[in-house]
Image (cartoon, rainbow, N blue to C red; front, side, top):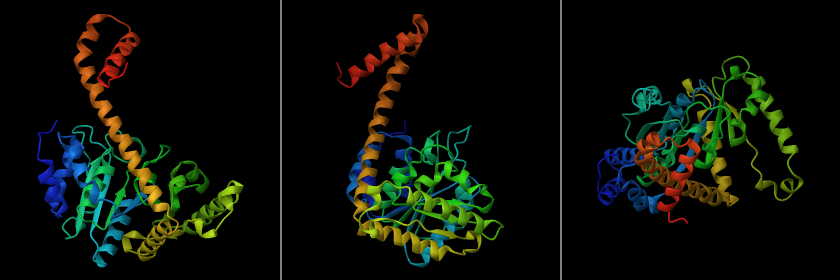
Length: 329
């Protein structure tokens, strides 16, 4: 456990936009330092102003290059950008391998950009446990756009759909069968599709495959969903980019703006963000429960080893002890 700190003082510095204070705040959240939830609570009223953009897709799709190109576009518009890049966990230190920060190194010294690599630490869904809270701190620090870039994901349920206002799924022409890509779960969370590295053969074919599958899916929606104002339905765009050359990035940013405007006009933005807040409350509850359970386990582990009881009897006894800590009967 990290040493205690003054949440009020640090919150004030983060709200003032101090990058060093923001970095320290995220570290306290990641390490679950004493007082980290008080820090988040103090800054909660300052969140909700930044647009949160999720960038996800299979490994090798060029997500980091696309993120860097989009960030450069926003900087040219005088916007401040925070980036949370989730990297695989180091097997030696438990920390992030920092691959994304290395690939976006040119941006790290730019004023108005804050990049934080976070270790996945075994989290499913492509996001680290503290990613949403790191995004909250960036939001509170005054960043206009917060980009959440996931590590490469596959069949796992994707947290990014809840965490971001708009989620872009990034694919490449050589991803293979477009139908198989749909089965991977990535397409279920997309608000728009980006075929990156589109200067390679097969980009047009992949775009057509995605368009066909999307049209079939839309046609097969339940009858009730098809009724009503057509403006209530978001038609997911498919675009091609070559992020390494900044080709297609302006169109990408325009589609992101269009989706955000659609969310606001249909009043879906508030509903989506309320869902995200409920998810953070859920995660905070699980985190508190996990810490209590770990304390009980550490205290009882030696006794468990010496008792000779079955694992199931031990689990029952420890669970009852855990319930007592929660005030259960």
